[in-house]
Length: 283
Image (tube, rainbow, N blue to C red):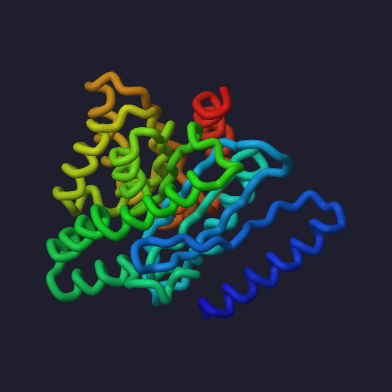
């Protein structure tokens, strides 16, 4: 099923490329290779039309278990890439180790967390989650940043990071590690895990204490939990750090749909997110 989806997506990209040659205004990605240690990861990179150096966003996708075909990483990243390129941004979505186009490179962290939960319960999952956030997952995103900084069309002084769910937590750790980034946007970060993992809560609180760049935190009202948004907002308020918390109305029929608002309804957040980013990266 997953292989067929990816073949279909590649077919669509090829069709779009042909259409683009005939003058239609269609933005399509380049498939790029990114070295992360001994691994060669794949990424999808969109760029706006024209020449020059562009503001850039690197995206941290969430956790995708190999056997879960409800959502597809390539499809989800593609939805976002189109939107950002049309707004004048280079957009890079790295498929981290074991996921999607990088499935043959390393081991999928979501699979490891699921295995740990079956064997050792919630505590086991929490331990594996934090270990991978701070090691190989962080390494993959830093490799993506290194790749971007070598490109001539990227304005290295105007790079922001964006993440969703597990990738939202990861985005905060990357922002902590890379003070040269200009902004962070976090969709549903730790929405599922915050209430279940005291270790993750403390780690993310420590991360935002060390971050100086503006941070935008986003949830739908019926996400699994709003506590990560309110908790991190409280910490940032106490430290007088620039940030914005946005809680959108209920979306979809389930917590999972609300958690995936970022892909399922871009119109909900588009105006607010680009106002936030444009003020930092374009002005």
